[in-house]
Length: 474
Image 1 (cartoon, rainbow, N blue to C red):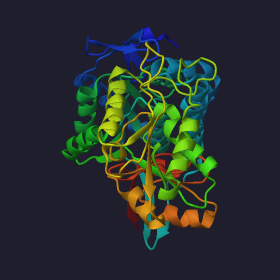
Image 2: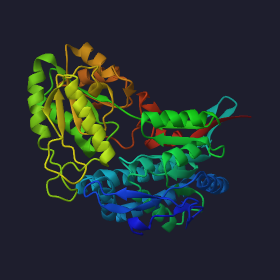
Image 3: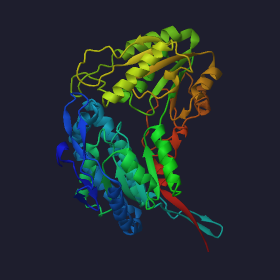
Image 4: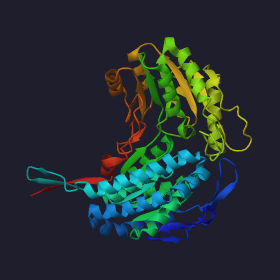
């Protein structure tokens, strides 16, 4: 496995080859601001070569049994597990994730998902069911173009690549330019296990070039994108010209509703934690905390106390719970939103801009209270560690506020009565909802309503997104 600075090639048709591009993109450590290495800024011609390789590989790969494809994925999972510490270190350098979080979530979770897809490939009933004189079968969609983000750089790749390969598709992947190196490490693993040439191809470069070319390419049958709403809408528009299948996993502005019968100490602490993970750089983060009006002051005090425990610092430092934001541009965006909240009249209870770090892109846990439901910080995705506490009148009002969003990705409900919580959860218009301390389930479908996206990732439904349905009459 090469060093970060060596990654100036692309992986096409089973080999590391030169890009048509000659410009290099510099990648910096967000903690130290030192240069980590470079990747090549690829071209539309690189996409052509990768699509050609994926197209040529598709007939043989899709003809394998699911069990045979699953065996490759299982081998990849084994190498991911064996290399977990070094892969976690790679993500810590790229993204600034604290070491324990990087091991458990950034690498541990996608490794688990690779195993889930390996098992699904071996057990999924692709031949479907009999319906009258019809046989309903599910077949791979074809060549998949995958465009992935920087915030969970390996996890978001595995959700797409693992699902697509399990389904029998071949893949052209564009990794993020902000945290790219773990994608190259995955390509090394696929190469080492002998994945057939052309089944997986890795390109590097800017979204305006590589992403645009993938979305437009007539040889790509489906594009799966995770990222910002603006970029996702552009992908959908460009892909429409060739009427290809599109899956989008976009933004969120998710709400945690704490009902009046909940244990407030526990519930508010959980709400803060579900906002601050990964330094708030999580599309499904619960960034709106909804509490009864008459307990707003109590909830605010608890939130401040808990948030102050989210120590920021270098990923490997003792006791650090949050690393830096990914880069200076993201830090400025987050700081701008904090100022916007102040300007619009929200009460700034804890200001993460005030910290001791002069090097690195650090913003600490930030708490706003008395937030109006239509304020900018309550409506727009900040992608930073900023929590908005909003008061509500009654249960119906809480549900209304939770649903007062262009997004619908995630949510949460805390109550002393789980049946009551379930009834409220069913009323929230989002793709996922946690009840009390319900843990994230990597085998469950992940995706959103409204402008949070189209389609689902993870588990059996995530695999099905890469399949077409055929009815054979006989």
